[in-house]
Length: 103
Image (cartoon, rainbow, N blue to C red; front, side):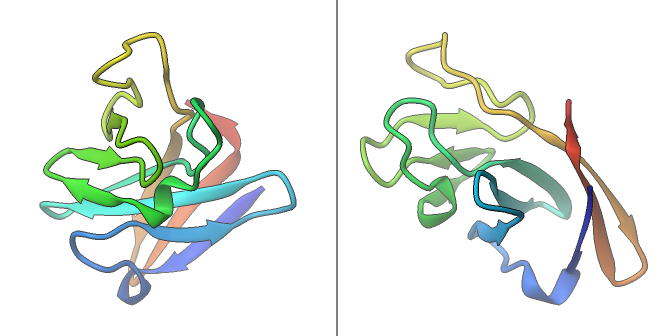
C-alpha cells in the first residue's frame, strides 16, 4: 500500500502521525532535510511514538522515554527493541511511503 503525505504537513522537529489502517500508524519525521518513516507503535508498551519528541536523530517515546534511532529503528537502551522502518521517497511536494513493505 502506497501512502502519500504532503511535505507541508510534516513539521520540523516533531513527528507526524499518519494512520494507515486499524493496525498501523506511521511516525513521519524530518531531521536536517531527511525524512524518516517508522512504525509509531513503541514495541515496549505500545505508546504512540508520533506523540513523542525528536531529539536529534532519535525519537523519544512519550510513555517511558525509550529512545529509538531514526536511521536504524534500534532502541538506544534496551538494544533488543527495534521499530519497523519504511521506505520513503520525495516526489515534488509529497512523500511517497511504501507501507506494505517494512525495510
